[in-house]
Length: 512
Image 1 (cartoon, rainbow, N blue to C red):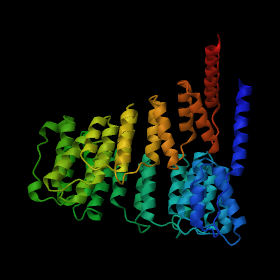
Image 2 (image 1 turned 90 degrees about the horizontal axis):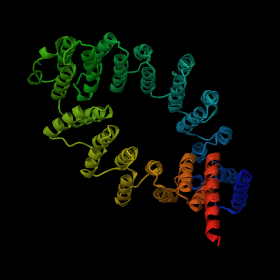
Image 3 (image 1 turned 90 degrees about the vertical axis):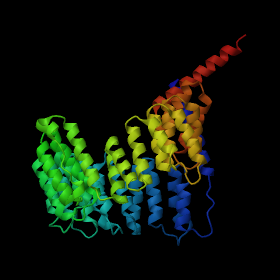
Image 4 (image 1 turned 180 degrees about the vertical axis):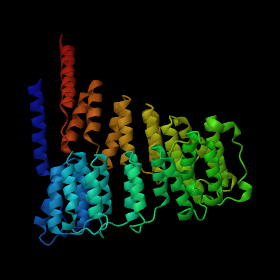
């Protein structure tokens, strides 16, 4: 059997090699970088794309690759996990000295890290000064994130100090906010607080996101005193106008104090928040009765009362309500989000599309897909809305229903399925055993020039083999090979077993 398997594999590779030679590109009289980018983008096979990329200079002596062409080629190699080829193209880009975008290096650094080549990722960043790139901000943030996730705190700190003040690193506030976020995720809010305190010395000013991230980290680590001091600093830094967008930051601290049983302290801080933070009018600063919540009793009741007071204390505005609702849905606080939606409606404001998207995602995460479907029915869905619902349905093994929404999406004017739509649906259908439907969707995906990964191909091929549909499985194996994706041994095993079974059955039928 294994001998047959090897022969089959070799035959198809030979057939493809021969076929590749005859796939001639119709070259124009004058080649432009934009035209070449389109040719490369349309190639299923990354090696064919690379061959075209390299041939261009030989065919057109006066032609020179520019940044977008390199970006297209590098992205094609990253998607297909051809890291060594990517490295060669990056070196070629360095020698060409053409202007290139920071996002190209950021993606390459991620690709190195994903392949377990962290040293290569660090080396690439440290050598960015050899490239014609004037902005390293995204690459800087990317390499720091990877190093912190790999627990290389000392190295990350050293790299940060070396590069933070360089003119190529723009938007320092954003970089510092991101670093604070990563440190908090790694339960190092103490270090995050030090970075926050250094922002003044670097002439950076914390944003609302900075405060929310750090407040969350401090509260999760039980650093209540530091969290309270952080809250007070908000009053004179970013809460001077009483924005309702600050409510989420206040709520994090108040909920934490209640959880620790410090209801009286939370009530005192709430009054200061309403007066100094939200600038709420006196009529909205009514005293609340927390008597039933003293000494740690009925903590959830105390949280609810404080949340209601915060919502009522907000000076009505479309931006404030939208921000609050989206943040609440993202944190899974469906009940409070609905209260804010009602408050928003009572004050004459209509929720925006971001609110609907956040609500659908929150409902799907909470396994309330039926309610998410009702939301879709009452608005004009976007691609992101459809994708969220389709993913929710597939997660609940309802991919056939998801397929119905996919078809509805295709019929809706201006709402075109993207690569994420196809990937979610094909994987969902395969997991539910609907391999014929998955095969049909995958065909449409390829027509749109969206290339699935090897795992998607393998899952579909194995499923078709289980159904005894070895002919369709062979077609998808050939498609894999044309894209330079090598089927796993288990995929070949499934295919060979299916073909042998079909042959035996057919022989038995022919026997007199």
